Each structure stands twice: as C-alpha cells, then as structure tokens.
Length: 306
Ligand SMILES: [Zn+2]
Image 1 (cartoon, rainbow, N blue to C red):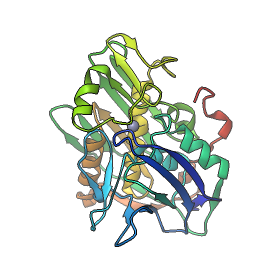
Image 2 (image 1 turned 45 degrees about the vertical axis):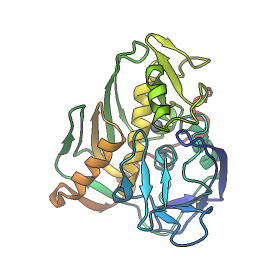
Image 3 (image 1 turned 60 degrees about the vertical axis):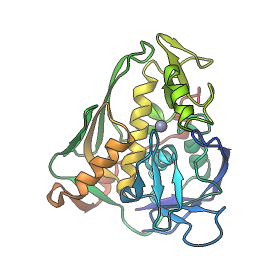
Image 4 (image 1 turned 135 degrees about the vertical axis):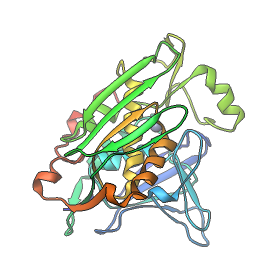
C-alpha cells in the first residue's frame, strides 16, 4: 500500500546556496497525490511545483524544480531522499522561500522528523518502475546507467584530487532500511579550493563548516571530522536516491554512477522515460514491496552521530 505521514512536521533553517531562511513543512497527502512542493510566500498564481523529473531545470550543484509559471524550489534532493528512503509516497511540502533548508547537510534531520511523525498506509497499491533493459548517459566527466535488478541496487564511484576524499566506491542494496542506516547521515561536501569560485557565482552563500564537510588536500576542515571514512561517496548515493525519487515512483533497477551528479541522474531519467521498452509500471506485491527502500526501517538505527 502507498503511504503518507501521520502528521505534519516542520523544519526551520536556511538554504545552502541562497543563504535565505526558510520554513518547510511536510504535510500528509492522499493516495496518488505524489510529492509536490507549495511556495507559501507567493500569494498569486500557480504556487505548486511537482517533484517530478521533467520539472527539473539546470542548476549548478543542486536539484531545482520549476513549474509552468516559473515558480521554483531548489536543493530539494536531501528531503526527497529522506522521503524515498523512508518509503513515503505522498506528501505536500510547504516552503516559504526558494530553497530547502540545508540543516546539517545530510538527510538525517528530515528522516528523524518523518519517523517521529510515523508513516500511515493508504488504500492504494504502490506502483514501481521496473527497469527492463539498460539505459545509460555519458558526459566528458562521467556516466550513469540503470539496468534490470530485483530491487534498488546502487553502485557509485567518485574520485577527487583532494586526498581527504580521493577515490571512493560503494555498492548497496537499498532494501530493509539501508538508506537510514548507511546513507542518511552523510553530509554534503566541497573542496576549500572551490569555495571562493562558488561564492563568486552566488552559490554556497549559506555554507558553513557545520553544514558541509570542507576538505583541503588531505585535511578535513570541518570540526569533528568525518562521520564515515567514505562519507563523500555515501552522500553522492544519498543525492542519487533523492534525484531518482523524481521518477515519481520507486525504481526496481540497478543504478550505477561514475563521477555522476544531479544533472546526470536527471538526464538518465529523461533517457529512461524516452525509451518506452526500457521500463514498465508494476503493481507491487508483498515480495516486491519488501525490496523497496522504505521497508524495515528502525528509527533507532540512524547513526547516533547525526
Ligand atoms: Zn547533496
């Protein structure tokens, strides 16, 4: 069965890139609603923005969705990952500004909030997107691919010049609360050498050593260091889950990302949906449902450090 939250939950913070304050409230929604954002600071016109792959517009370093009236919400990926990772299919996310609060830079605060309210079952079955044959996209920097698999399997590879990140690879099957245990507390990261360039472009204006892991060569500058030795690749997987959630339904497939990022995962969804014989919608029975990310979550399994 599809799910929603039992009660609303509110988060206050500021945007990583805009630096602007924002209050975000995730509200329960009916079956077949999906995930939508609503800008409560805009009083006229169409203020609802669908969290769906073809509403994504190009944006450096984050995922930004825009509706037909030009109303936008950016940096949606961590709250989207939290909803997907907790198996929440329907919600209305109200926000009074253009950017989702970054909180601690991970998805753990969103996960804690969602699980504190609890998940309610609705009277409609879950549909999933079953990948039937491989689709891939490639750029000069890397590639991403989706191929058939029984559940959502994720492989990710990154390499950075800074020794504090270096080359990292990870593979996870995202069933049985894996997202909450393994990925949800990993924070966004950047290289100190990129900070000035980002700020010159009006990005990362709300970034701090507390809400992002900042590295400089072999050094981790953020106080307290890393939450996991491979926190960077874990965060990239968290981002990928949030970006894949824009498919509009859970994916049964094997995602591989090689130096992939937000734009590439979105391109991959475009490629999937433009290839009609590469996927089909399936009703989830209990066996299939048990393979989806939200099943089997125990709130106490969120790593204590987050
Ligand atoms: Zn991220």
